[in-house]
Length: 201
Ligand SMILES: CC(C)(COP(=O)(O)OP(=O)(O)OC[C@H]1O[C@@H](n2cnc3c(N)ncnc32)[C@H](O)[C@@H]1OP(=O)(O)O)[C@@H](O)C(=O)NCCC(=O)NCCS
Image (cartoon, rainbow, N blue to C red; front, top):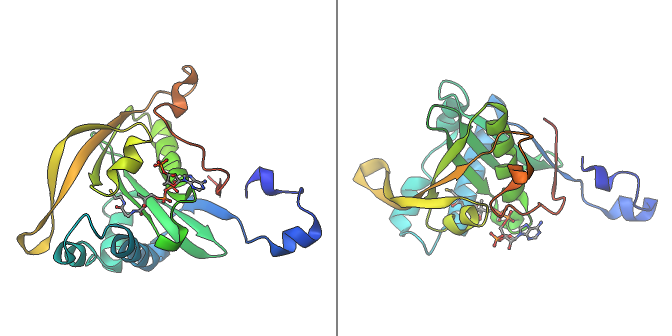
């Protein structure tokens, strides 16, 4: 729970306040929710950047795919949830060329800092693991979000989809300074999530 939310509101205001957004590590049991969120997010927020066919192929990843990513795939994922409902998720692949493999937010929850809080949580996890650079294969619609948070463009790429299709995307990278080496841990234009999300690590 956000510390700022505890103990300040009057009882009446507290009764009206929606439950806080909480960020926690994803579990295997979240696989179906991740698939649902990814589908809703892409359908609702990536239209305009891609064709209907690309959207359909991109959202074909189902719960089995996410169960794999959380298990054998070795991805470390975090979900943002409110009152038990998953609003978004983000994932990190902590290999040699470490990658942010996903940030997806439900359309109804977009623009309120949930994506920023998830990305910040992934970056904290990366820093903890000694990762000094993150890359992301950003969708064309998602790229401005990453750029505003310090990710710089490396080059244009194509991300393969089933049936020989592909998504035009941008490879972006960001240096992750080591903890306690100065003021740089939030560098690159990250913006606070306006207390949209608490975090239980
Ligand atoms: C890209 C995406 C993850 C961003 O998630 P989000 O929760 O909307 O992101 P945020 O709310 O943190 O930030 C987005 C904008 O909302 C506003 N915002 C940020 N924090 C806010 C807050 N606390 N309250 C209100 N608005 C806020 C800002 O205008 C911000 O724009 P900026 O990038 O110019 O700073 C989301 O749009 C999405 O899921 N897109 C579709 C899937 C996709 O393509 N993902 C990327 C895959 S590579």
